[in-house]
Length: 332
Image (cartoon, rainbow, N blue to C red):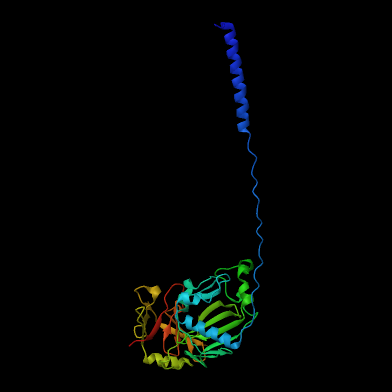
């Protein structure tokens, strides 16, 4: 049967309308966002720090620990010394790089081992560190330790180079609280004194601080050299009249009283010429070592150059910046 054109158009329009409505409804259902899934958060309870165990050790235990430390320190290996350092608290290291004081708070000694590359005495004794007599000689030798509870202070170290504030030092104040022993020991060659700070308890045995310093007269000590009298200017003049030339072999420098000239870092290859010199007063460096300043100059004393003359018969330069140390000995 043939459907008239009039009705066929109406039917087609109706079908199109029905399909369109159905598509619209289905699309709307698909675009409705799904409900968000809320994840349940698990709260992490912060645990309180474990109290530091301050159970005391017996004297025997303290000495055994210190003896083991000496043994490992004398290997001069950072890995062996690191065994005595708590990784959480670290330790305080104080050294002098030339004139510059440096205070550091690492948790290992690797970067500083060159400052502690020497052997020390191993006879452990409780008591005060012995007197330094001078010229590389102590009244007694050994490793001496004392109680040091509540005495260790970070502020006792010169920190002008880093210039830390009190706030900056706060994280390291724990070292002050746990330190209870201090030890001092001289190097085997007696040129250096090593100072150590320890936390020694039953279950907590650590190195918490370390520093070293040269003896006051280290620049002049030489027990093979005889002493030269320099108490009066006449004694100095008498010595210089019999010893006219002094040499620094390492720096290829000299002081020549006959030629009236000397060489030094600042003068390059041209010697410093002098016509006069002035002997300064005696300065006592230690129980055995004395020095006098001697200024070399021409017409203007203010433009002169000063060296130190010791009662070991040597001249030495003052340390100035990065310049090397000069030691002028009697030429051989």
